Length: 181
Image 1: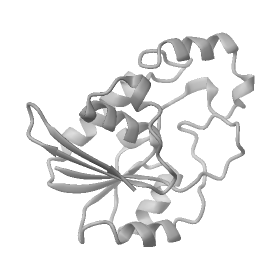
Image 2 (image 1 turned 90 degrees about the vertical axis):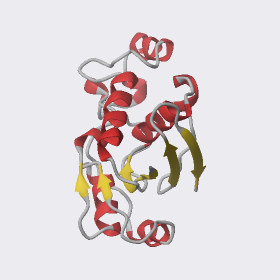
Image 3 (image 1 turned 120 degrees about the vertical axis):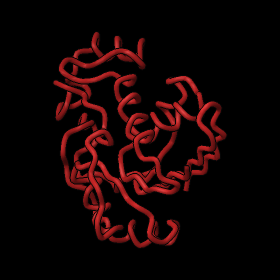
């Protein structure tokens, strides 16, 4: 399977605001779509997060994108929309001490995010597909297939509007080819 994992354009939100699943607008997707279109094979099916910052890019890239909630960004619960410095320090420390399993109040853990993203990709059963999503789901997918610990995959650099190619061959022991542009 050949996956093109595409991160949405920069969100239009102030720096320092926690915005995991918060549905915010993004910069104009047209220049990003024009650049990415050249990197995608023709007639590539496209599946997207329904959040506006991903959806607008998906609609600029493809005439008929499909939307899947499993590609949404991590749910940060009661932290959503707050300034990071306003979130209780003890909660942030608990998160830092257990990146994989800690869930913010009313939110989800990185393990839960990874499980839903992996399930989404496993359900695709296509040879080539593009996914327009967020940094969290892209990192979670890469962590799973590259078999790297959460401390590594949670900090992978993924620019806004970037495309990451992931090739998975076989079911039992996948061979992974990873390129980020």
